[in-house]
Image (cartoon, rainbow, N blue to C red; front, top):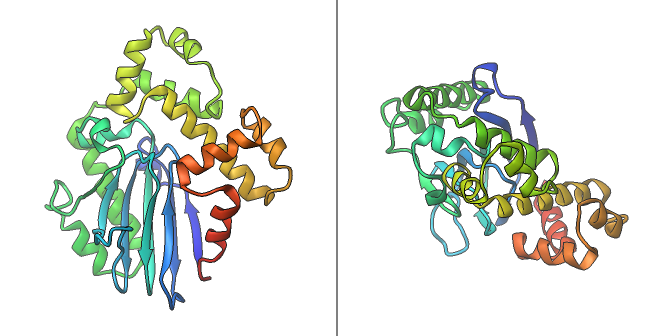
Length: 263
């Protein structure tokens, strides 16, 4: 499996945090791609020879908007795979789509029939080219058209609050966040649900978990107790419980499953 992370074009840097491209030409049996909480919603173009499906055999569309996902999603696939995921900043759902972010939590929606994807025949154009550069250019144009529709829709307070929580790896006191941005607890809660899709507490827990996940991946389980403490968990058991909550697996089970993905 070939995975690459791409820095977004300067024209969309205010909206897109990073781009991940996954491609595999050598899958001869069914594989599972896990989608787990990372704090970023995404606009995703995804195709395979036989199509993607989730655990209930529901077929997934090719051009999809994923909201904040707390519950893990497993994508089942067979054959050639390419996934191009534009990970939006956490507060961008409302700004780009004009939808309350809470309505999209744990939900994916087909973008093919929505504007401006429909008017620019985005899905058709993406399917009709095999050039990654061309596909990226098409998706860049789509993001810019979304941004043009709802200007000026970016809420600076929620943007800075979400960044503060992310930079602290979810460990910053929410009381401190409220004081820093001169908002009440209820206002902060409402803003996060409207723009991010989850409560500030849940977003903090996602950031904390995601940092622990990265550390475990890089350190291959050496010093799990140290990673738990560094990530702000009381002990290793708390880390494992949180891991199961967000992935349905223990860390060992999760990474064993990931290692079995055909390469």
